[in-house]
Amino acid sequence: MKALTTAQVLVLARFALMLLEMALIRAHLVHGRYTLKDTLASIGMRAGNYATNVALAGATVVVFTWIYQFRVYDISMSSPWAWAAIVVLDDLAYYWFHRISHECRFWWAAHVNHHSSQEYNLSTAIRQPWTGVLVGTWAPWFVLLLIGFPPEMIFLQSGLNLLYQFWIHTEAIRRMPAWFEYLFNTPSHHRVHHASNPRYVDRNYAGIFMVWDRMFGTFVAERDDDPPQYGLIHDIDTFNPIKIAFHEWAAMFRDVGRARSLREIGGCIFGPPGWRPDGSGPTAANVRAAWMAAPQGESPAAS
Image 1 (tube, rainbow, N blue to C red):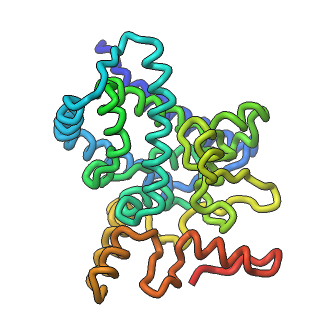
Image 2 (cartoon, helix red, strand yellow):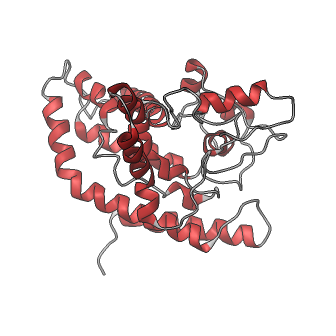
């Protein structure tokens, strides 16, 4: 019998954990929710993500290898200090990739599908983009190449970073110990990130270490008096993976078609999601400002 590859073992492990979480939820032993259509949509998104990543793997390697030739240092993959450094620096690169993916519509169009589910469970973790590689979301990692980290090292650590993030997509775990909550990304912190509540929207971008959000002013703790409401500021009512993958691209092209100047075209593409020429759009900043200006206890809907 042929032995399973590491990738196959990881896929099976993820599905086993999803089934376990589903069973515990159905038995009312942990908090959470699964619906068949939503779970199948997430699986469909992961299948498309895998297909596009495989199709573009060669181009990705070529680009990384080309940039790597301009490196400042030669960093050895055998050095434990190099591995310690890349664990930290890879997560810093992830933070900025993730933050830009929320604050620039061009990258948001690739990332938005990960936030499209109105549920929050382990299947949400596998709801991954189809167009991220095409629009250059690897760019923050180019700095690591220029420093001298080999492409193979970056690919491996980035994979390990995403592997860590799988378990934090759950409502089954309420809180980790206080020291762990302070240092690391946890289900509680990531529930905030996936929430559309004005208090929480566009917060907690880190992959592993919460130091980046605390350092750059994007950290918000989950509050029991403001439970996360998952999904988008304006949700899309579809379970079709193709629509989930491309709905924001279609909306962006429609807005560009209606633009009346180069400034408006630039705003539609590179402005924050929800940008409008008159500044009144439902951007995260406007939604939060309206909420803060409202009487206590009210949460005005974005227009």
